[in-house]
Length: 96
Image 1 (cartoon, helix red, strand yellow):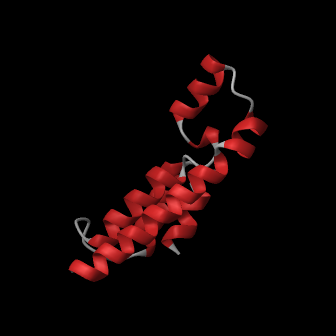
Image 2 (cartoon, rainbow, N blue to C red):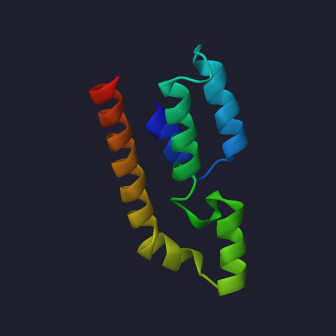
C-alpha cells in the first residue's frame, strides 16, 4: 500500500498524500513505517517530472519536454524507486 502511495505521489500532490497516509496508519512518527512513507513520497514523486517543484523548474530552464522525460527518465526513476523500496524493506527485516 505504501509503495502504491509512492507511485501516486508522482501524479497527486505529496502534501495531500502524506496527510492521508498518516491518517490511515496509527503508529509513532519515528518508526519504520513512518520512514518508509517519507521515502515513498519523496522518491515516488520524482517518477514524473512534474512530481516536484524542482522538476517543473528543470522543465522550464532546460526546455525538457514532458514526453521525452516520460520515455527516457521515467522508467529509470521508477526502477530506482522500486529498488530503493525493496532495499528498505530488506534492511528493515534483516536488521530489525
